[in-house]
Length: 72
Length: 257
Image 1 (cartoon, each protein chain N blue to C red):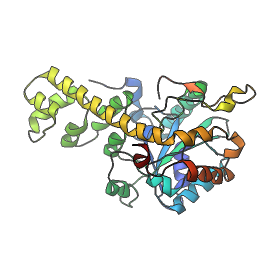
Image 2: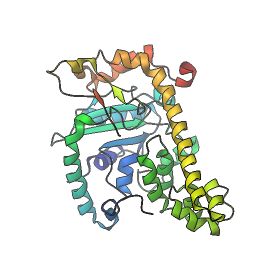
Image 3: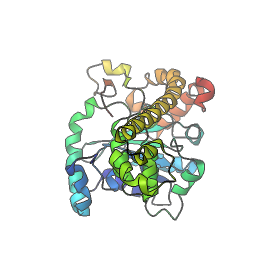
Image 4: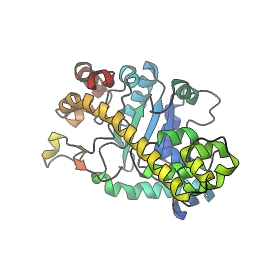
């Protein structure tokens, strides 16, 4: 039973340069979801799914950790 | 073009091994999947290591995110420290540090910093144990990582029922419930045993994090009063230490129980 997709598992066949390029493209695309990310994905705060920075209520501020996320 | 987290790992370790890359970026390094946009490192628990990391991050224009100060006192209590900066293409780079990864002994943690460890990246078995979290998606990664281990270790750690069914007959010494079920030829029992095991691991991780969450409540509430510029390195560190000395217990189990 495969637990990850063929696309995921193909990384082993890539050269270092191909892997770096694939990761770079993926990281570019992943920026689009920054505002929807959970506040923490690692460490001991990762169990907190909602955390609001009071000052985020000010619309002049950049969006930050004021999100409820479905997944880390 | 370079993975910013791998480049940062190299930069952090330039003067000696102090930071070992873990979790999602280690999965990338092991060429298993591209699955995390954050980096996390197991840090050598010393004042010197903390100072060096803070200096490197300050050079990148980083600021603290909500979390403990990067100080060996709180790291020793199991806390984690969190930072963020933008790379030269204005992409968000989040960096997390801790020195006491769960489910690893002190000796196993120390071994990560030994010269015998070729790269500053956690090995597959260590990564598996770090991935035994409350998150369901981590268990798919565990199944794939386990394929890289010797058969007896794969049987001990895999989350793939088919691999357990394939391996268990040749490894009768395994007492893992799923392996016993596999030797009895009962696939459904293998699947149920795995589900029970994963649920137990998830519940244990959830309970562990709940202790930290309770203990951090007053500190995080006060953290909200900071303006983001106040959290920029290097000065932000002193602000967090001052706050943590007042409101963040070093050992959450004592304070949070």
